[in-house]
Length: 337
Image 1: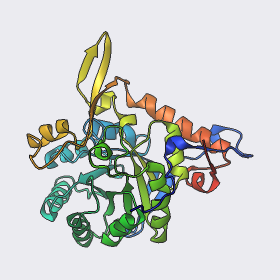
Image 2: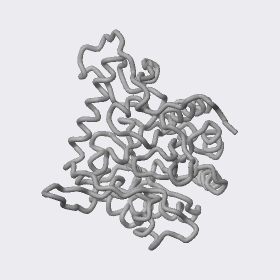
Image 3: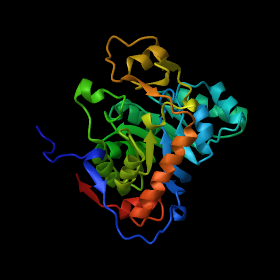
């Protein structure tokens, strides 16, 4: 049975058309954006790009660099409470570095938050709940319990790819919803299970649903360039999460492999056999690997990539008469290519 026979679009399927613009220079563009976490009654301010909570991407070293540019970081969930305390004492900013959890019981979540607060006198401001399948009942129950326990902490939860999935997350207590299943460059869920949704179509459809509840979405997956980031904002994303684009940098701390005088760094999906072997000792006999492992050419420091991305965003805004990132959505018109 077909839910829809309409073709669903992805980033490569569209371009954004230019229009008359009053902005003569990229210097006039404002990248700082305010995102409202309505349920938590919080407002986040910065450049709404987020490093993925993947190994070798969502590191504390990455967060230290990104926070200088007011860019956020969903920190890997495999750091200990003591690691968090040490990094906060070294200057990690909790406005831009978010605690990440999966299917963790409230006792685990509570222990992290209270340990950090007791040791640093700082309360985490934002949490990211990340699982491959945000539709399972236990996940929404965890969000609901966490919201009741910590009503003033911002919550982003996912992943889902449909409007009804957005409603489930928001009804459970999420301020923002992470969108993306099968779209990541090192995710093989669609190949293994047949489950997924073209990323740009999911962003467009889910952002419309989120707006009904004064919520926002985070586009997670499928971003290959600054152009795709612009298209995600044009589709209605509040934040855009980056994994592979932020991989391969010194700050990710991935091991180096040398091949024919070139340096490469490891990147793998968090449902891959590599990730499961590293963190759990093996791939459970009831599971299949749903991720890939690749080598990414060493990109040096993240600063170079940040400059390229922010420059691309500013330039795009001048083409469509958008003063800031928030206006990209209302000023953009797509064409199919």
